[in-house]
Each structure stands twice: as C-alpha cells, then as structure tokens.
Image (cartoon, rainbow, N blue to C red; front, side):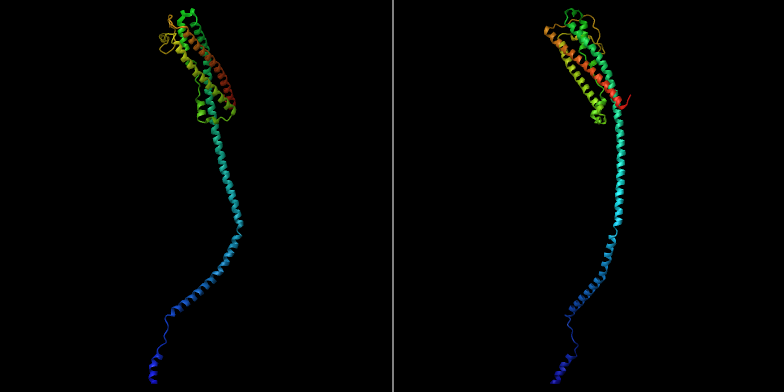
Length: 305
C-alpha cells in the first residue's frame, strides 16, 4: 500500500512547479513604478543643474541698465528732432498763410478805395442836382399858389413832372466790395482796428442815406396821388419825348378844377418832399466828407497812392 501511495504521489513530485499568472501583472506594475521613479529622479537630477545658468543669465541681464539709459536719451533726442521738424513746418505754413491773407487784405482795400472814389463822384453829382431840385420845387410851389401865374401853366406842368422824378437824384452806392467783405467773412482780414471802425461807420452812413431815398419814393407816390386832382395826365404825357426826357410844352394847357382842400393837400405833400430833399442833400454832404476822410485813412495805413 505504501508503494502504491508513493507511486501515486510521484507524478505530483515530478510535475514542474506551477507559477501564479495573476501575480505577474502586479509584479510588472511594481517594476514599472520603480522604473518611473528612477527616470523621474534622473530627470530631476538632469534638470536641477539648469537652474543655476538661469540665475546667472538674470544677473547678466541686471548689468544691462547702462545700455537702456543710452536708448532713453536717443528716444528723447529723436522726439525733440521730430517736434522741431513739425514746429518748423507749422511756422512755415503760418507764415505762408499770413502772407496770403495780407495780400488779400490789400486787394480788398484797393478794391474798396475804387468803390469809394466812385461814391464820391456820385455824391458830388447828387448834391448839385438836389440844389437844382430844391429851386424847382420852390418855383413850382410859388407858381401854383399864385393866381397871377395861372397864365404860365406850361412851366407849372414841366416843374410838376420834374418834381415826380427821383432816379436822377438817388444815391446808389458801389458796395460790391463792402458786401463781399461782410457776406464772405473777409472782414476779419482787416486787422487795423482804426480802418475797420472807419469802414463800418461809412457803411452805416450809406445805409442811412439809402433809407432816406426809400422814404422819398414813398413821398413821391403820395405827391402823384395829390397831383392827380390838379394836373391833366394827358399833358404830362405830351411833356415827355420818346426817350422819356422832359421837353417844353407849347401853349398854356389848363389845370383841372380843384378846390382849396386839394391845393392844401398838394402843398403839404410838396412841403414834405422839399424838407426831405434838403435832408438828403445835407446827409450826402456829410457822407462825402466821411468818404474823403476814409480814403485818406486807407491810403495812409496801407501806404497806397
């Protein structure tokens, strides 16, 4: 029995020792972990010496402040040169613009002088014509209010036609330059305050004389309405030639049948016209003197002939 037992157990002894495969992956993982730790330690050892060169590099970078200071000075110098170039360009442009405006100012002044000269010539004519007009208005008033003059109705008609006209005595200024100065803003070019004030005052006086001319037109309209009750319009028509000039009337055409009230109304309209004619003549003389003084000021300030 013992022998059989030994025989049965022998195969068991002869079998090669069995290995547990389930333990093998664990051992492999443990080996891998050790290898990873070894590699990590080697990497740390290899990387640790690299820290010191970085520190050295920082120290070298620390000693570079001298070079940065030089660059800062260069930046300041470049900025100064750029500023100087821009400033010089600005001065050159300003000088050019100043010269252009000065030339334009002189052109405006010269043109204004020409306009004022034309105004003075026209004012001289107006003053003389209004003196003649004043005499004709006085003569017309006398003839119509004098019974002894009713035999000279041809003279009365001619003077009445003349009294109803105003274009020959109207002042029309040469204000092209003045309007351009005011409307285009070019008045700012006149930097001399004395000249600018004188021009402004002259323009105010011109406007005043123009308003008086408009008032005279209104009075003439009223005068014609009052004359319609005294004078025959057909006779007025014969007193004008084809060019609308007044000509002498032959004979003594009759007046209309008017009453005392019509004559008084007519006389009042005539008085208003005579008073305004004298006022315009007076203001025209004042404007003439003002224009002459302005011409002298302009020529003196701008050294013009």
